Length: 157
Image (cartoon, rainbow, N blue to C red; front, side, top):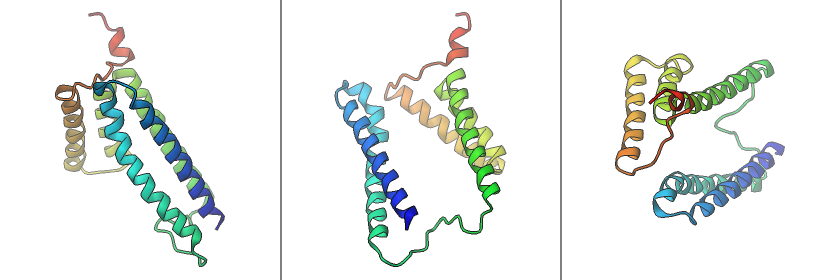
């Protein structure tokens, strides 16, 4: 039951943070707020759904079985998985900072899919191509300015 309350609190915190971020973007001009709204509004909808699920779970008197349960997982294995996930998040952030969002995000996606997710080449290339196409469409047609990255920016023109 304690876990349900923690999940509920975390969902409320995320909903408040995302609401604030989306609201702040409303003060920007149309071109600047397009990307935060394109990501923020669907996330807000999903968070409201998650909040409803968490409230229902807390209100139920009987323990419900979660889809993702940590029962039966050794604490050491869970800790190793947590470290691995945190490493990938930091790795993505570093690559995006170093070589830019479009190129770095696309390359990091491919590396993740092949090494950590152990996807087969057709799936990894397909998802990576979709990622590249998304970045290309965002920059070409929606004119979202993706910064080039620190390393690329330092190269002589």
